[in-house]
Structures are given as C-alpha cells and as structure tokens.
Length: 404
Image 1 (spheres, one colour):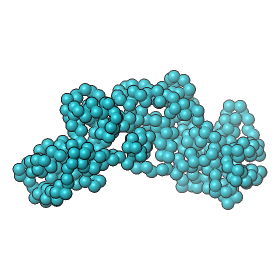
Image 2 (spheres, one colour):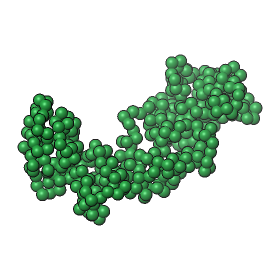
Image 3 (cartoon, helix red, strand yellow):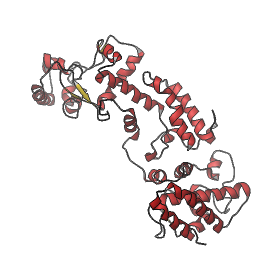
Image 4 (tube, one colour):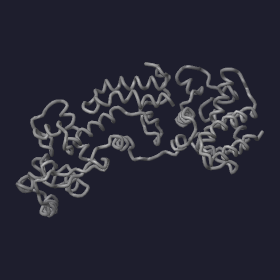
C-alpha cells in the first residue's frame, strides 16, 4: 500500500535527526501519530475516528505479529538515544564522547553534567546495560552490581541477598577491587548473604586490572561495534517474537499490496461490513444485502453468505467449523496446490468483496460463472508476480475456477 510506504519512508524519517539527540515530548509524538494515522486511512491531514479501522497500537505492531509495521515513534526515539549512549561507551573518535567522559564516571554516569538531556540518557542506562556485556580491563567504566561482566547475568541478579546489603549500589568494578568487597557492604550480614559473599569473593580473586579501557559488547551491534538501531527496534517491538499464523498467511505471498492490506483488514474483522458500520452509527440495519438472511459481519460476508457458500462449494473448499479466523478456516482441497494457496484465497476473497460492493452500490447481481471468470482474469495478471516455474500453479487455479 503506497500510503504505508510513504509513512515509513518520508513522514517518520523527517524526525530522525532530532530523535538521535533529544527525547520527543509525548504530546508532540501524539500529534505526529495523528498526522500519520489520518494519512493512512484517508490520505488527508485529519480524519474522523470512524475512518480509522484498526487501533494505532495494532497498526504499529510488526507484520509477523498481525500489524502493519508502521514505526512507533517513542520506541524509535529510545533506540536512537541508546545508540548515542553506546557511542559514549565505545566510540574512539567522537568529540562529544571524549568531552563527556572527562566530566562523568562512565560506570554510573554521575559527575558534572546535570542537564535535562543528560538526565534522559541516565534514565536509559538500565536498558542499555541489559543489552550489553563487559570485558573487564581497568574496571572504570563497568558498574560492579548492574553490568553483566561475569558471564551473562549482573551481580545484583546472581547475588540478590548480598546486593540488598550493599552500601552504595552505583559503584564501579575498580572501586570495589581497590578498596575490597567488605568496604562496600554493611557490617552485619545474613547467613545467605555471607554464603553469597564468599562465592563472590572467589570470582573477584580471579580478576586482574590493567590500564586498558573496558571493552563493551552488544549482540545487536555490527562488525565495527556500531549499534544497529533497526535490529534494536525489532527486538524491543517483537515482544516474545511469536509469529501468528494469520499474519504469515496474509503477508508471505505475492499478491498485490492493496490485496494483502485488504486481507489484513479481513483478519482483524475491520472491513466495512454492515455490522461494523452499525457499530459506528453509520447504518441502522445490519442485514446482509446480498442474501438478506443474516447480519453481515466479516465471517458471513466471506463464508456463510449464500453466494459465498456456493462459490466455495463449487471449488471444493470446505469451511472449518471451529476456526475463529476467516481466511484460515478455508481448507485447501486436493485440486488446489499447497504452494501459494494463501495467494489463491486472497484472490477469491478479493473478488467476493468486489462482487458484494457491486450488489450494494450498483445493484449488479452477477452470477457465479461471472465471478469465477473475473477470478480467472485476475489470476492471469497475478501470474507475472510469481516466478516462471510457478506459472503452472496459476493454470491449475484457472482450471479449478472453470467449475460451474
């Protein structure tokens, strides 16, 4: 869909420079999201809420998780600021990083700097620590309790009882090794804390300091150590990384972008059927205008309407009774190849929707043979979107669509 491409490539990109150094105010982000939302659904500067078919949080989700992949501004702003923080810890030729290092302690970010911009970076320090590990050299830039410098977990997680007895949590590894662990703990320890102290002391006995700066690693960083915000954004937005079968069905095919967007609306139950229009107070009667037998919701439009049922029956496509998703409930018959089957279903649903609109807006009730002819004609155009070796699959579609 062209508007979706323009939002991600033009509207969002205009703010990259300022987001790389400053945190955007929530009110400003809200206005930008409003402009993007209006452009997506209406192509204008503003639009009524009734035209916004899907919630914006859902739109900003990854395509693999059922969204459209529109950039979330707050998350992207955080990623770009983390990239700036990563430069502070790792960059060698950065004038800003060199200037800041001379005024603060890298392990805790405390020092002479106290501006709002610096407080924003300090607030992101726990998140930055969670995506990096440290190799101890001089111990000056590594937080003793909060950085992961011994294996994969930080010491506050590995030794929680002992950490609860720490006098000053924000302290560097070098400070602890130079003054001794006991100097940073309260005098009286619980039995569990004593056991953890003894285990930690064995770890500290093996650490040797040098005058070489600590080395910080990030699994998301590139070969040269630069933090890739694109990878970081995907990690922060993906949650548990669960890919939905519905999203894979809609997006992993070669159908035209507008048809895949249409399939996404069908998946979310947000097409402009009469039930949805009645919910928005646009119409009063929800009865299907094609069959006049039942309320017209998404499932009825594509599965249970009399014309749709006869269409799928002619193709030998069975409807799963226990499936909540419209597209996934259309079971593949043996006459249709498994490869690109999702593309075939989108083709058929697209023509059913166009036939429904012809009935509603123009009063044209074309017979089943005409709809199948239109499907065959559309399939001929879609064949060019497939590889040459897959063209015979479209030929199989066309033979199946000759059924009358």
